[in-house]
Amino acid sequence: MRIRLAAIVGVLCLALLASGGASASTHVQYGVQDDAWLLYGPEAPAQRIQILQRLGVDLVRLTLRWDMVAPTEPTDPRDPADPAYHWALYDSILECLHAAHISVFISFWGTPDWANGGRGANYVPSDATAIGSFAYAAAVKYPWITRWTVWNEPNVRLFLIPNSPARYVTRLLNPAYRALKSANPRNLVAGGVTSPRKTPSGVSPIAWIRGMRAAHALLDAYAQNPYPVRPGETPSSGGCWRCTEVTMATLPKLITEVKRNFGARTRIWLTEYGYNSKPPSRWLGVSNALQARYVGEAALRAYLAPRVDLLIHFLVRDEPNARRWTSGFYTSRGRVKPSFNAYALPFAQVSRRGARTTVWGQVRPRTGAQPYRLQQWRGRHWRWVGGTRLTTQAGFLRRVVTADRGARLRLWSPRDRRYSVILTVK
Image 1 (tube, rainbow, N blue to C red):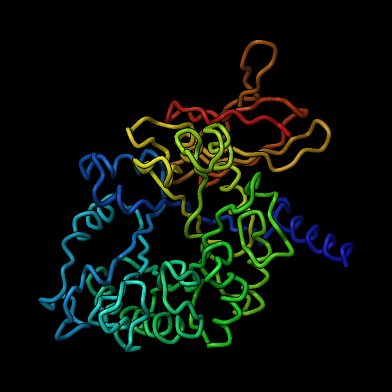
Image 2 (image 1 turned 90 degrees about the vertical axis):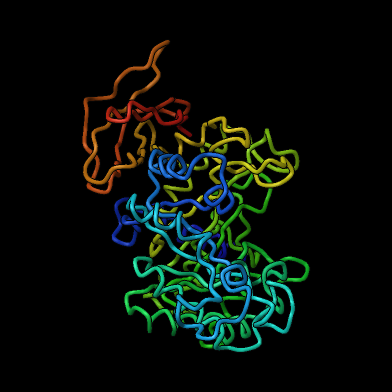
């Protein structure tokens, strides 16, 4: 049994690392989520947009709080102009993102108390039509947004009670799916949005996927938050293949489950991912250098994975409380961390065979072929490796260079006058 499991794992990993394979998600998009910073950050809204542009984000994930937009029950819930709706909190930032040509996808969350018998925002609505009406109104209000997810981590009680996949499908996902498709057939809807593992009172993502299938879930994509959960776990190693958890390290397991339960045409969205950096984290994390390295390795992991359409990094700016999330590109005081350049100019090792090392990267934020150069540390100096070359039209590059284990490389974008983080060949 152990030999068979090892063989299966090996095949799955090789599929992800296949060079130039047709199954790789070469059109993958990279984004961020940081609702608090995006809506209330210390910078002016225009400055927040400029930061996103310097990072080169393709899209932003934003939580649309149903309970905040509709604190009282609308008379005509499918009409976004109903007086009960309060869209003002979201209007300005969504308009700024749209004007800057930064795509947005919305996650619905938060049941109003009038829709669930006076209970908290994490309780399922009593009426299966309520979320559908709100979703329809949101789609009409923001017609340029065509990607949506329904809820966040419903497999844990912190976000949904009861955390039942059947109740999630019948009261939230399917009604929202039908309404969004009715508003605009081009809308794409993701379900699941599951946390990486089972909590003491929750449901594992694997059991959630299978429960959604049994409840006849409607979805275009399955969304997963593949955070690391084990000490020493990297984007490509250290995960548990025999467990019911799903992390970036065990991404092939998610791909297999989604295909088996929802069919080969269902896409995969990786909707939250990141590593806390320590410092400033006081409870969990990796060094700032490791955080930066893992940003590039995660970007490569998503690029190589079949049917993965997007990867969202959480956060942009660390939370002020160092015991909470410190996975941002900035400290809470606004100091840039190494992960900023690692995100804007991702650079990672694909493979090595002897002295032949394959590296991968992307030059953001522009579209179209971009000039770049590689450097290698030799002796006491950085030396250029060949001349200036161009990326693909999507900004990606893949090179084979002569570099043994321990060699140090970095990527240079002449248009941005920016270096990537240093890659040490493994």
